Length: 339
Image 1: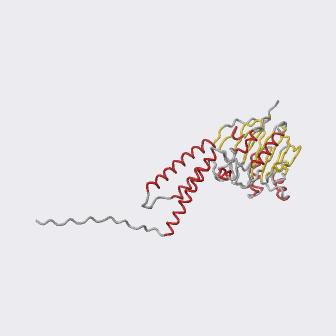
Image 2: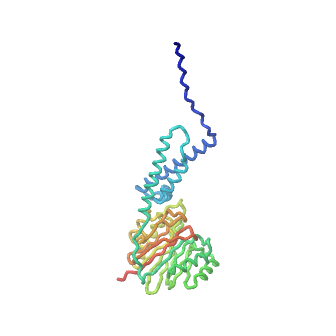
């Protein structure tokens, strides 16, 4: 019997990839951007646990990687990475995707516990309610903004970017807030009060930052209000203007003092330490809700802040939601400490 020769084994054939050059280039660019985002997040974390925003230009990286933004950055990184359709190194690619998903979960929990505050007390009937809002150059119209402000029924309103240096806009604010005394600030902000403005002083916080001082009498309460607008230029360090603001707060420490405004600096900045020596961040002490105020509709930075000195008690500070600006409005209830 003649045995038939065994048939040779058929060699496995690897089909060539069907991707064209454009898809390969697109995948390379997307994954390079994904890796760059991971590098940005890693540097931001290192800065957060070391020097923070102490030195420029490293401060810029710190400002673009606040805690609430970390899950967002990594979701974007995951989307850019995409699914692994290439036959080479699928295990390493899947490992990176799983690591990314775990980091998103960890950073999400971290953001929740660090940025959600529930420390408010029940406001008393004698408290003075103060509203602060960066109205984004009144781009939605003074009438809409004023209608919202009237609903909040606060004796004191402080606004940044209200375009009050235009006589026509200032007149419109006065018309829309007839129950208030409207007083403009030299940098375009204003205050509206149901009371008396005893004194007004302009301060320039160099470089390119501003502060307006108002000595107010509201009912039987008399206190000083500082309306602040720190420069938003990323090329400028926040150190000098915030140091000058702290020096001013120290000079005014002999009276009840409240500071409201757009600090354009996260409230965990090292440059706010001098101000901490004389004042307290009210939202962190007696706030309720989510801390970040900019940019709407997905805020990740606590730029809009309220500070008071030891002569002022605050029962509640809350950041509200509105479509009329890229900043969230803030409502604070305060009372003065009686000696």
